[in-house]
Image (tube, helix red, strand yellow):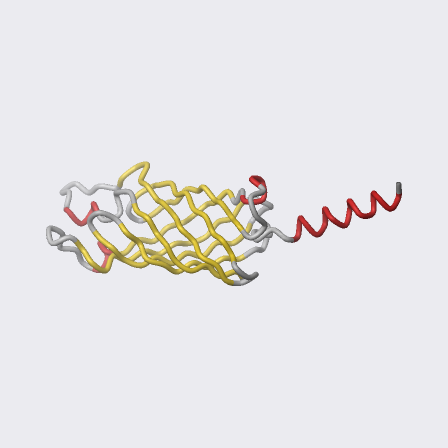
Length: 163
């Protein structure tokens, strides 16, 4: 009976440590392409684990190519986000190298939600995809077409790194 308990404890420890999101202190960086109907650009994110299944971080987006109807300056093309994620890959127990994360973001352009997934091929390198959508849009008194850049559904794909 003692041997069975010892083996079960070892399996539990190995399985718990095999998850790609390690919880508090975990760090992830993502760099990728951002696609939407009025613009395409680049995205970079940094997430830091604050608890077993929660992380927070920063996101930066910059629209490179715009629809011809939009004339936007640098500040209208750029967005900075404060992100909060619920990393539930280990709860779903799909694969130890898979991280699934719904989250919220407070941005210079809107308040929105996102749904993302990361898959790591090694402990430090993987790919990600993320869908983002606005929940509350930021608008100025004189609405400009440039405000539509980040006030719509976006999809991102790219590389993920684990530190």
